Length: 596
Image (cartoon, rainbow, N blue to C red; front, side, top):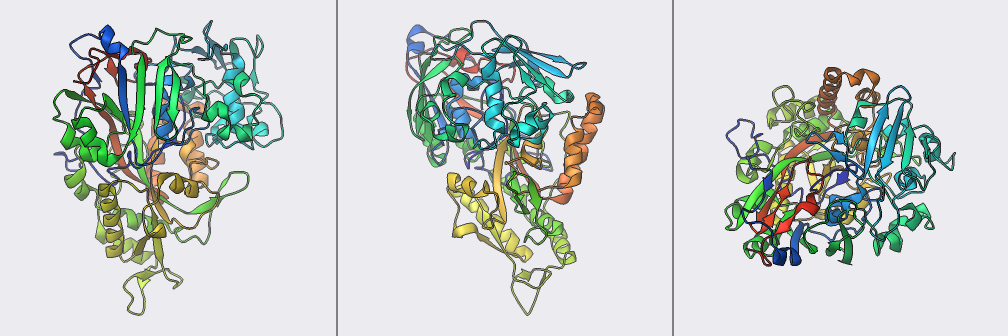
């Protein structure tokens, strides 16, 4: 999750959730102030030839194997994004510190409000790591993958319907996307996307309306889109446009990289990179014994143990990630549309709100927060300063057991015949099953605490299947069109670098795994990118209105925001978390052949 964000929302593992339900341990009354760290580090000693010839060692903190999908259009978790990021993730555009698209990347963008077009022009001579030319068709191909009705991709959203012909292609009524054209041919450099209307989001990298990465059409064209996920071009021999190319991978465990001689940008300095999966419980020991230069997904719970390590400096930036409580309130149709269930166990708004008020996130903050993860108040991360609704304006779900019990009682949930727990308003037994990813002992303790609080509220709460679930099985179950084993689940997402949340909460979004849908939600999501929203004040107003609405209906509840942070070894030069650093991997250097 370093460098540019060219892709869409991705799910995160328990490593990113290691402080699930935690808030910052700060002096703020609400525990909502993260610890301050610099967003960059560069050793005072310059990189050396011997250092750069050695291997940069990076840890991916995760308690399960990564899935092994290198291309953003097919990815659905943050771990894959991390371990394949030296390859550049096919990113098209450069960006500034506010994620606004700038010139100088693999391609440049020109928007034409009069004609409702976005013109993407590739730089001359750009090539894939196997030497193949990057073409206009490679810009269009991800749209085919994402929107194909037989695709395994989870990245399609209703916002893409704003592209002419996209809706017909997605429905299988057209073989091509009529609104994407090639003025100088599919093997040329120019791609023009024709929209029904342009939106303010299009100015930002990672927006919902335009895919920000290329995929190698010529390399994969003979594989049916429905079979891409298992194709050797994806699983065994992927190609890249970034500063590094894949040398070797051990399935689910590690990736190894060497410089890509066909990279269009500055030649990378370091000759070898290795990214290795490390469990949450082994993170601290791995850093103490200096096995890694820096890490992805550093767990907040272990920050106190590593923040004073000799020969490391801690670096951080406000994260695009957030964790949440999700409630199962419906199902998805065959066409992928979310439908709320009329007689679902969790369809009562007051039941959901009561459960959220019953969990004391501020109390957990005192014990585990450490200023890295901090209590969330809405579903828009504060990294988006203009759009995030303040804690004062939108407090979120501060612990209030009395209020929780009142909500439950008012909704008709009560104990009957001397029972220990409440039953449903219709008199039927109520058992709420919690779906949670398996991980560290700390995470398990927090899951137990949440269920304990719900039992104090009067709800019989139990684990789905009696215990936490391995991450791949967890998401495999949630991603089904209909499931009944998880009533409430704990998850985390890494968002776009443009805050429109349709990717997660839209009526046709596969990531809307609780299946929430309402006319008001759809209306507000659409209004975020209406013509009126080119007026920034109006757009901000709609974002804040949506955040309040989502807290009111509580189909999803905010849990934690976080900092992206990592210890960085003092042999590393050029490390920067800034969104404006468009060549993260290429700028890194080493001043020693071994970790200090």
